[in-house]
Image (cartoon, rainbow, N blue to C red; front, top):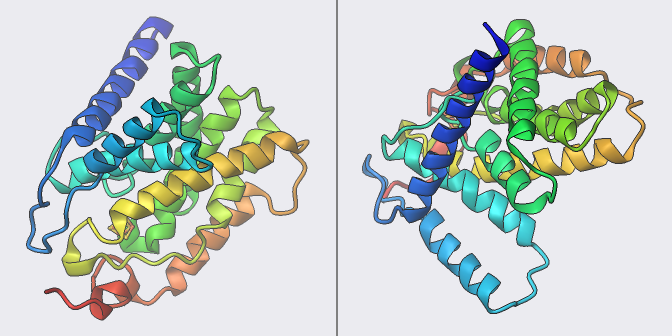
Length: 256
Ligand code: SF4
């Protein structure tokens, strides 16, 4: 593939992610499936814009925008809209949310940065998939939202000027703090806890990148060890916590 073809492909991916966020931010009503989960991204987005216009100080500004972008994508996924699998549909909100955050909050952000971001994120996702899994059915949500968070942390560290060591550190921090996370979607629908979980995955990714960039790349747990730990934890995880909806939140929340 030529550089031009590669760049075109990356730009297409970002365009699809961006239009998914935009659609998600205008959505309203109840998500299909019977749980009667309300779409919230549009409503939160309106509130954030009001706050912005009134110059109100919001100490959690970046977190709120990250969350609303991620939730917009995951509500689109839950509603059967078009998302970019990154690395799965259930975890599709983390990478787009953190890229949109980068465009929103980083002064020097541009389309070259987005390409570097996506390639770095893809490299980390590939390493995790090759050595462990990105599947909730195989290793629980640590493999889905955990992997997405590691990908996003690495991408962000790269565009913040991180060295390879700092980028690896960012991915490791994000993945490490998702280890053991189960997959327990209520009623088998990718809605609760999945939609909010992507918001939190995005917040952790940004924090991980920021911590890594402030260090020198040296750290205690190598990414490879963290990925292997995730694999082993996934193997040991009971089946009821692996996308079967027979354990966890899926059996402790009354569906009415
Ligand atoms: S809880 Fe399960 S279905 Fe939901 S995002 Fe995580 S891995 Fe995917």
